[in-house]
Length: 177
Image (cartoon, rainbow, N blue to C red):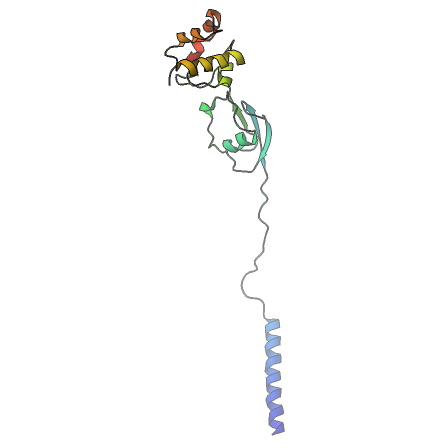
């Protein structure tokens, strides 16, 4: 009985040894998969100029938009003419983005490039030639006390607005919506 047991164990050891040798000698199946790191995105450089808070060179990720470049430059100034800027356009390395300024003393108003004296802030009124902080405040006080101006000529009723000041700004103002 011991002899049979030794024979069975010998056969099992032989089969196991043969299987291990066969597995070691068999070439691997399938294809080798080489793992490569993803490519590193090289940032692009754009030049932002004009009516932005901080003009200059900015490093942006690839596939950035004009809007991203403007944001990197601190955003538009109050006198920025954004009508010709496509904020959705993709920028590429070396692009120059220029934000034009409105004509000096003008901001966007109801009738085009005019200052609406019925809705303008003190800062917007100060952009007008000859209108400083004191006169701008007087215009707002007059508007608050007497209501909206019906025509630009009524601006002459504001204390401190004389014929010369009115003549200098009459082509730059409106009472429109």
